[in-house]
Amino acid sequence: MDDQLYREYILEHYKHPHNWGTLDRADMEAHDVNPLCGDELKIQVALGPDGKVADVAFDGHGCA
Image: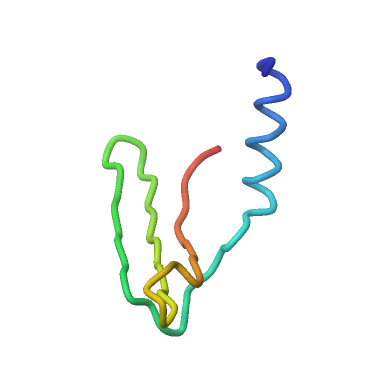
Protein backbone atom coordinates (compact mmCIF):
# COMPACT_ATOMS: atom_id res chain seq x y z
CA MET A 1 0.00 0.00 0.00
CA ASP A 2 1.53 3.34 -0.95
CA ASP A 3 2.00 6.05 1.69
CA GLN A 4 -0.60 8.46 0.25
CA LEU A 5 -3.33 5.79 0.13
CA TYR A 6 -2.44 4.73 3.68
CA ARG A 7 -2.71 8.35 4.92
CA GLU A 8 -6.09 8.78 3.20
CA TYR A 9 -7.31 5.53 4.79
CA ILE A 10 -6.21 6.68 8.28
CA LEU A 11 -7.82 10.12 7.84
CA GLU A 12 -11.09 8.58 6.60
CA HIS A 13 -11.33 6.44 9.75
CA TYR A 14 -10.38 9.45 11.86
CA LYS A 15 -13.21 11.52 10.35
CA HIS A 16 -15.79 8.70 10.29
CA PRO A 17 -14.89 6.12 12.95
CA HIS A 18 -16.69 2.79 13.11
CA ASN A 19 -18.15 1.65 16.46
CA TRP A 20 -17.60 5.07 18.06
CA GLY A 21 -19.47 5.60 21.34
CA THR A 22 -20.26 3.58 24.42
CA LEU A 23 -22.27 0.45 25.10
CA ASP A 24 -25.21 0.39 27.52
CA ARG A 25 -23.97 -2.95 28.80
CA ALA A 26 -20.35 -4.02 28.50
CA ASP A 27 -18.93 -7.30 29.76
CA MET A 28 -15.35 -6.07 29.40
CA GLU A 29 -13.86 -2.60 29.40
CA ALA A 30 -10.33 -1.21 29.15
CA HIS A 31 -9.03 2.35 29.41
CA ASP A 32 -5.55 3.63 28.67
CA VAL A 33 -3.72 6.93 28.20
CA ASN A 34 -0.49 7.65 26.34
CA PRO A 35 1.28 10.21 28.57
CA LEU A 36 3.70 11.16 25.79
CA CYS A 37 1.09 12.60 23.43
CA GLY A 38 -2.12 12.68 25.49
CA ASP A 39 -4.04 10.10 23.44
CA GLU A 40 -6.79 8.46 25.49
CA LEU A 41 -8.82 5.37 24.58
CA LYS A 42 -11.61 3.36 26.17
CA ILE A 43 -12.81 0.16 24.53
CA GLN A 44 -15.87 -1.87 25.54
CA VAL A 45 -16.94 -5.37 24.52
CA ALA A 46 -20.33 -7.02 24.99
CA LEU A 47 -20.62 -10.79 24.77
CA GLY A 48 -23.62 -12.67 23.44
CA PRO A 49 -25.27 -15.62 25.18
CA ASP A 50 -22.89 -17.95 23.33
CA GLY A 51 -19.86 -16.16 24.80
CA LYS A 52 -18.81 -14.67 21.45
CA VAL A 53 -18.30 -10.96 20.83
CA ALA A 54 -21.69 -9.39 20.08
CA ASP A 55 -20.78 -5.70 20.06
CA VAL A 56 -17.73 -3.45 20.39
CA ALA A 57 -17.45 0.29 21.00
CA PHE A 58 -14.66 2.74 21.66
CA ASP A 59 -14.38 6.31 22.86
CA GLY A 60 -11.46 8.61 23.29
CA HIS A 61 -9.39 11.28 21.66
CA GLY A 62 -6.02 11.55 20.01
CA CYS A 63 -4.25 12.58 16.87
CA ALA A 64 -4.49 10.95 13.45
